Amino acid sequence: MMDHVDFYHDGNRALQDEFGSRALADRLLNLKREIFTEEDRAFIEGSAFFFLATADAQGRPDCSFKGGLPGFVQVTGPSELAFPDYDGNGMFRSLGNVGVNPNVALLFIAMDGAPRRLRVNGTASIASNDPLLGQTVGAQMIVRVTARAIFPNCPRYIPDLAAGTDALHAPRAGTDAPEPSWKAMDAFADVVPPVRNTFRG
Image 1: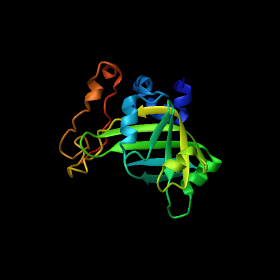
Image 2: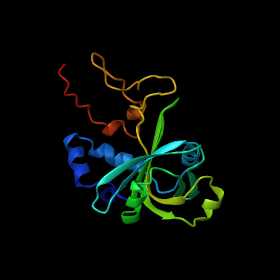
Image 3: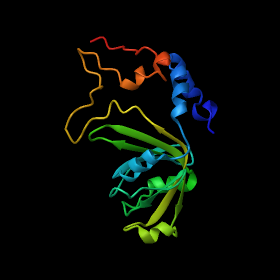
Image 4: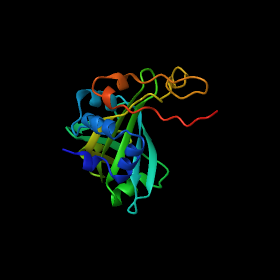
């Protein structure tokens, strides 16, 4: 089980202390898990895209968009998901990074209807002889990710692209943005710090 020390480093802690959010960060850690729920599976396998963050051997980051038909990402085990590598521009920045640094982060996000975000951090491996290759149209290789941390993220700043509307909670001049409902939940209300606003316009 991942604890506070594994999940938060000194850089996280310094900013949490500056903004008074350490207690909230520790409380939110209770939402983190290492096993996919059925709700996670439905969201992931229903997604037509996600964002993939990787880093090279020196720790220099790269971020990539991965897309396909819903179902192109599969939850293949209690803590494992898999997705195909499709033909691209041939640079292999993401998968080349995985070859030298297996640590990855995936962001699944819904930007239509009810906004939602799910983050999956873990380690990745690539195979050109994976059993899923024979079942996956267009796949060059299969990437499998073993999750180290699965956790939801506050979706309040996500726009609704289908409706063409901006995020309800995005800050706007001349008005106070509504607080997200989760901040009033009994599990968090006692540790939510006041919002710091430096705007002077």
